[in-house]
Length: 369
Ligand code: SF4
Image 1 (tube, helix red, strand yellow):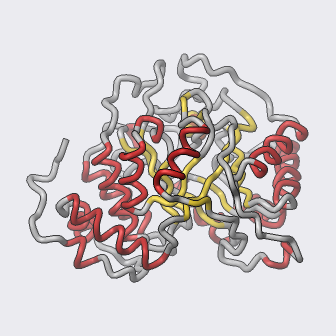
Image 2 (cartoon, protein in one colour; image 1 turned 90 degrees about the vertical axis):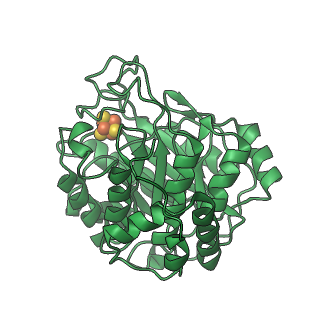
Image 3 (cartoon, protein in one colour; image 1 turned 30 degrees about the vertical axis):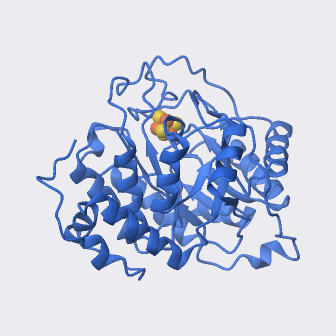
């Protein structure tokens, strides 16, 4: 599994686990942290986590696919690409009543953030749909929830429009390292992705960007991905770490599943080099037991997608997540609207943000790239 000759014995994790926010990490520094003995790495990540976060709080996000399937892109892991025979049928944009009802239910069930995913390359030529989504953003924000979208590539103008509509965060994953990327996606470039992230950041929207492990990448690629994220002009506020759930019909259908130690190493390293970010234990969580997920939370993960489905792939059962929170002594994190570069209190006015979630929602979920 390892392409490092051996794990170095002295703990570089300890040396770098200062909790200081830096965007000037060298790849060598990231590698030295990543290669630290695993339990040392985990311990120091847990220390850093407690410098910046309430270690009991875990954010719960509900992710609704508002436009499923039929995507023109060729992301090798994705069952929504029209290029692969996965049984996922192309659907039109969901109607307002369906989307708002899903958001209401998510809020009632305890989610503080509602994410809307659409399987599109970008919003080019989709003005009507884009305006509809802007309206969804405003409506859901007025319910007292954080709102996130993942709609593919954005122009700076579209990012500003989303911000003005009340968007809290935008998800656009880097997926993997720049080096491995051409083996996974050919229909858009790594730089396209970075350009969209810059547009989101410049608009004052919170950036959600991470990657997927299990795409056939080496450990060097994982280190490179983490290094890219941690040397952006500012760290993404959310960093999803996904483990591939290989879907039959996709080019990666036979990939070997990642194990829990690979996830713990990724999460721990992310936590040390991006100490203030929310690190999201995302797709693939369903494969991990409660003790294994507990290790991820100890390593610094503090956000999950809740619900019983991730579109075509299963997610953890509602009742199991409730039991896990109880067992591990975790509590849901409440909404935080002061995200992104610009202060968006003006949008909120006197909105009551004391929306402490109590339970875990059921829903319909998708991981988008
Ligand atoms: S990950 Fe997103 S962009 Fe890529 S094929 Fe799937 S829906 Fe399309």
